[in-house]
Structures are given as C-alpha cells and as structure tokens.
Image 1 (cartoon, rainbow, N blue to C red):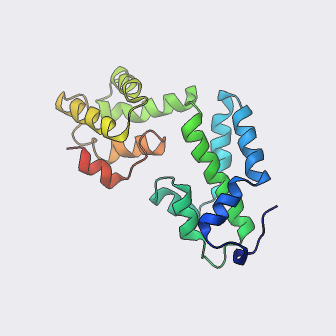
Image 2: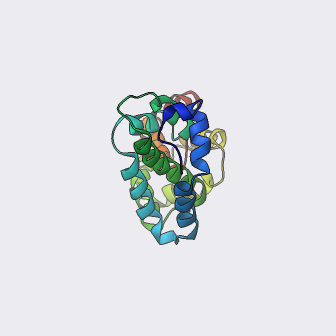
Image 3: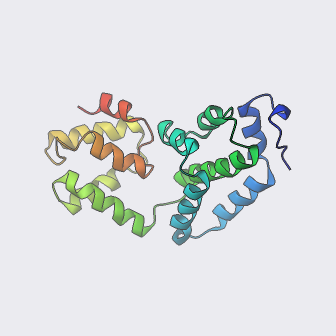
Length: 186
C-alpha cells in the first residue's frame, strides 16, 4: 500500500515509479490484459472518467498523453490529495496501456472513418486506405504520407492541418503535438 503523504516521496517521478508497482495499478493492468477487444471502449470510458475533467485532464491533453509529465505538473497542486492523484494516474496509465496494446474496436474504427471522410472529400474508401497505410508508422512517416496525399489531392488542403491532426491525435494514431504536425505538414 502506497503512502498518502507527499513527504514520503522525493519527487513526483519517485511516486509514479512506486505506483507502477502498486497492487491497485497491477490489478488494473491485469484486467486490461485479460479483457476482450469488445471491452476496449468500456475501458477507455472508465479511464477518462478516472482522469476527470479538471487540471489533470487538461495537462493530459497538453502533454499528449505523457503520464510522467502530467504527474509532475499536478504534483504540487495543494487541493489534489495523493489518493485522488492515484485514481487519476491509474486512469492515465490505463489509457497509455490501451493506446499501445489494444486494437481499435469496430465501432471506434467506424467512428474514425466517419471523422476522416470529410477530410478525404467524402471518400470513405480513401479514408479507410489511409488508416490501413499508417498502421505501424512513426509520426514522421505519417506526416510524409499526408503530404503525399495532399499533393495527390486526396486530402483537402483546408483540412490537412488541425482537422486531420485532431482526429488522429484523439484516437491515439498520432501522439505528437499539433505544432509538431504543423511543422511537418505543408
């Protein structure tokens, strides 16, 4: 059982390392590993609920889902107790795990395609082909592919920046910042 006293930890990073070994997180991780693909959206909703809609969630968005950076930012917020931070951090760790290990469910895949469709001039097949083509790509490869498709006029010039970045970022397909995206996509 982890201590609820900040003074027992030298830093936010030390506290996060202890949480990664805590029974609460290990139990949650075990549930995630044992779940079916159909449970992914339920786990995502549960994780977002745990993170909440306050400062932690805002830092979660700002730092592109980087758990340690978020914990370091909110560590000194006086009104945030360690038990509350623990719940929020388990939510963030769950999202991190899901983003790296869980395949997109069919409903979520269809949702991404529906959001990409206007960016691809309403062409569902082009949106699907794009999703398939970026699987396993690193961020630079994804932006290179986008630039290629913009040049081929398969992606709307108007939507190539924020609109496309938002969809890919929201679904964990492109984890870098919007400014990084904008410097890569021309």
